[in-house]
Image (cartoon, rainbow, N blue to C red):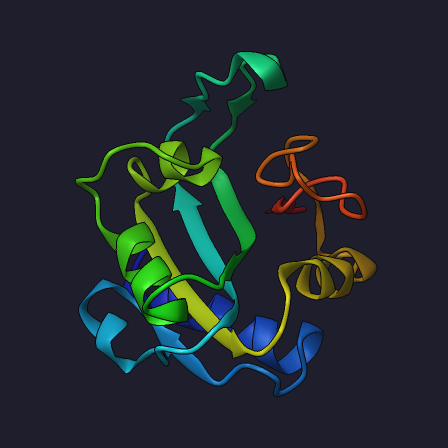
Length: 154
């Protein structure tokens, strides 16, 4: 997926699904534009190849090639900027479920939502008919309200 396609998806998410609540957008070369505050973020992720996820607790699911959206939170040091910058890097130690996906992604973009929480974003995204749960409990093992924080574009 080209940068133009990722940009187009980010624009679509802002305009039709998330209104104008996003404060900043970024692709790998632009991570410095993100705010260093607490809040939530969305990653738009393109997989060009199917990907088997080595997550035994989730049944080792396979993600088909496609366009995915992941909602996460950043409440630690460095806030959204630090967390998203890490997600945009290909080289990293796998720590979170999403790291398995971002390491192999063909393209990634991000939206920042200062002061928000990821469950609000998942709720807005799943209320729209364009997205559905990709893998049950993915990225939401500590969440009591969301079926998943990883969604796939229908």
